[in-house]
Image (tube, rainbow, N blue to C red; front, side):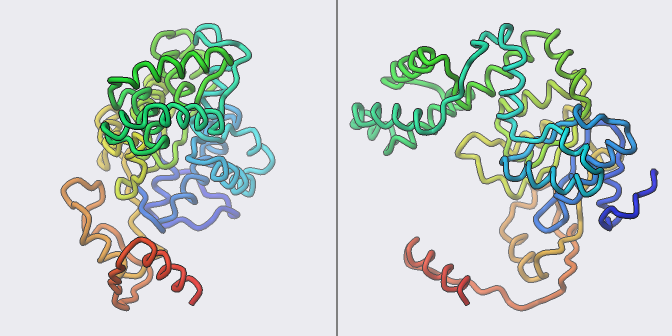
Length: 338
């Protein structure tokens, strides 16, 4: 095992094993307060300093742009200015760059633009107002619900039916007239590019030695397919996830992608390719015990009792019943002020 530079943060044994793991596809199961970000940053530094991964060939996929900036900033404290060459950003940003570089085989205009929520909200708000009775009859009670449903249709999760078929056609024509893609198009077009053009996939992997993915439990089926194809083509995959914290299922996130990833890349503790960060530095024993009590033990990657708490506090957790959401918000604000 390579020695750890003196200026790196301290790592416990589980964290160190995850940071210095082999170049096989890896999965790190990291609950809240277990040092997930520390491990991800140190893994990136380890790849640069001990696995000869050129920073420009290292991709960090994060859930938000702000998270990407924070990771890059922390990485710079370990490896210096070369951290700025790491390709850190959301998966949509990665797809945008990929389509820019391969617009012709992807079948998109070489000068395409990406429309923001201002444009898409305006389109679907008008459509919803013109078809409100049909929408209500189909459990779509706002234009935002229509827009979410459309996104799930484009990602292959839901099916299109009724008047929305014509709505999607008009939406596609609107984007086409502008030479534009929306955020779902970025994903779908990249997925299709990797699926249908092996030469492009090979070129992309040649310039992408390693892909580190944060919040993997919140990937949707198309995002999973993109990441999987990169790994199958030879890019090193290193995915951080917590199946207890998937909060974007309404937008198509699939925690089952964790099981698919484990099965496809044979991730296991025995092979040293699946790791569980087992020390919680944030919550006391009482808080964690309550959280574990309400989670389905049969479906979790972490078993009850796996996680140690550095805070041994046993102050009882209070259960507060609020009459409605407004009362709940008021209570939370009062607690924060106190």
